[in-house]
Length: 557
Image (spheres, rainbow, N blue to C red):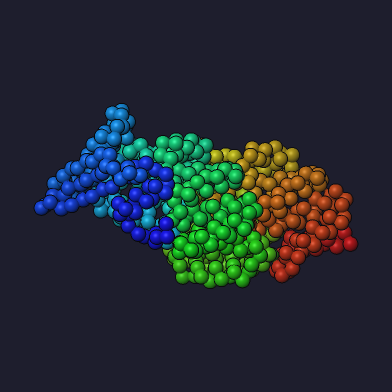
């Protein structure tokens, strides 16, 4: 419409929006002081003709009664517009019961949502905390807080707030109940299919609400269905083009499908709208990595320095890139800086996530002692679900099968219904243990469970991808099955937009070279070795896996 995003929705502007969205009716609201009282009015108007369809008016004895009066006016208007009595009763939980009796708490929550849309997730938190302080029974404020912490990779905190919202769900509206229950399944129990069913019902009941589409797309991405995620996020973007998170998610889907030009267009659109946020930094960095623009990547990291939560995230991203190119000393230094930055901002779980990701980076490079130390330290720092799962995998790969099995047993007991724990992490950890015990057939059997979701996006910000694929490739190498091993490692190259800068993606090229060597295809093996060694041309020279690769390559000459 050529208007600024912050323009007020006057009746004239609203009517134009109504016409542009091919809607039929708009509802305008008014509030006016009448001595010590307030008069609340609602009016339904035909968008095309401007004719008034219905009107309702209520008085409130004071500010604390405004929400109650608004409820009464809304119910009255809906009846006048012809909504059935049964429908009105079903969807008429009073605002002060369903949402909050505190007008100030409602305002704080609304401001939090608005801040998050344009400035990033971190800016939301103070508003939600204020809303909860004003009304400790404000269920949706807890859900918003849980959602924010989950997206900041603080799943332990997210779970606490999601549980509190779930406890309060009996006195909420139908719309709020669906949101609370859906996020509880994602954040607490990990039942992703059940979450998807809840969000689908929410979407069907309230088709103009973007939030269920956002989370439906998220569940699809976590389950590795990037085409469905793209479909949902495009629909969410159409409904809500001013939410910075939608641009991040949509670009992520395009990148995961190797559609980089479309991802780049998304970021240009976000810049035109002057949107900001931690995840926009992350997604833009990934795009520049896939394009091979090191200068732009460095510029993004520099721009994030000093910005709460953006700084630690971007330093950790740069650490992963160091690992991708075999620059492990640099990666360790960057991980330390990222952890320090996160801890300064009271983000202990995030810091532990960075440390446990470093353990995975070290173990595949052959630094088993370093990997064991990092993995165990991360668990001590913040033993949430994701940290324990990744640590268990790192420890299994590092030869400490007892510690890995102990963590796996804890996860199995604590998260019996969790989709990712049961179908991704536990099969991966147990397969890694089987490989350590030289039982590749058992490893392959265990990994069958993970097959349908192996392209999963595991966490909101940690780049941990295709672990079951890598382990299956290693198992086939152990079985001297070069054909099947090559097929697994090739997935890392074919799905580069899913792998991003996860360092195992570079090492998969070495796995591919070894697979070709098993096939006695010397030409392909040499080319694959050269591909890996070119990536690692500036790597630290003392890395065990690099020494092995060079020795194996020399034998092919």
